[in-house]
Amino acid sequence: MASFIVYDSINMYRSDNDINEGTLSGSSPTQTFAESNVIDSHERSADQSIGTTLTAINSGDTIQYALGSSATANCGAVYFTGASGGSGSIIRFLKGDSGSITNLETITPATEAGWKVADLTSSTSSKFYAKFLNTPISNVAEILIGKKLNFEVEPDANVQESFESQNIITRSLGGTEYALNTSDPQKIFTISFGNISQTFKNDLITFMENSKIEAKKFLYFDGSAYHWCRLSGPISFSEVADSRYSCSITMRQQIQ
Image (cartoon, rainbow, N blue to C red; front, side, top):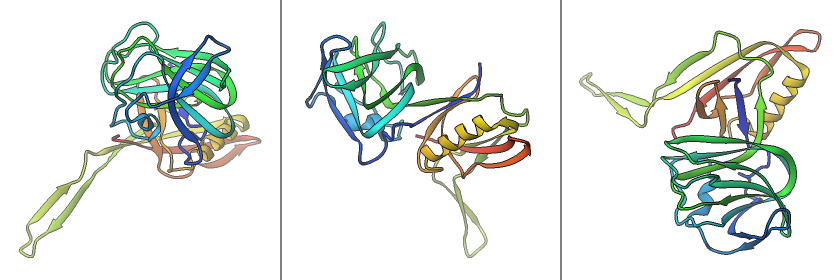
């Protein structure tokens, strides 16, 4: 399966965008959102952490992402800390203003901890939604609505994986060393592309700009597994032929 990245293209992590909770009523495309207190810790759905879950979710409960301006998304992803419960379609992504809200795609139940990803009809709107269906649903820790960046070619064969230790080594006056382990090691991925097009270069620059380089986390799929990452620095490009480029991307896997 081809590799890709899913990143926040709608600025859902910006402080000037509102994350509201409430309920959706009606049928697509004439649904209406009514704001109310229905979900405990609904702001956890977009806090860039997969360690804390939403609770008290009931059928019809909805999270609204009200943006500062219109933005485009074509992918939705949800992280579950364990089996989700529920049956059939359990989360629906939507877009639009109240009274004209249309369905995009759904997420089906998770049987274990991990990410579930759905391709959405590419849509531009000032509001996006995640509606919970067929409850009870549990273990929802993060919802990401954004763009899916498919790699035009697979990375070069020399994909590098290393680990960044979280150890602090100190030495006593007598010469005895002590280690303080602050957290588990973080995996570092370095992927390289030897020959990519101007279009794919522009797509990578857009991804980097939307991620604010190291500031925002994103989802990286390596062809077999999902990784919650952030960039370790800017992406540098070298022109290897007319409008053809090489580059390397270094990503640090996040613990939460």
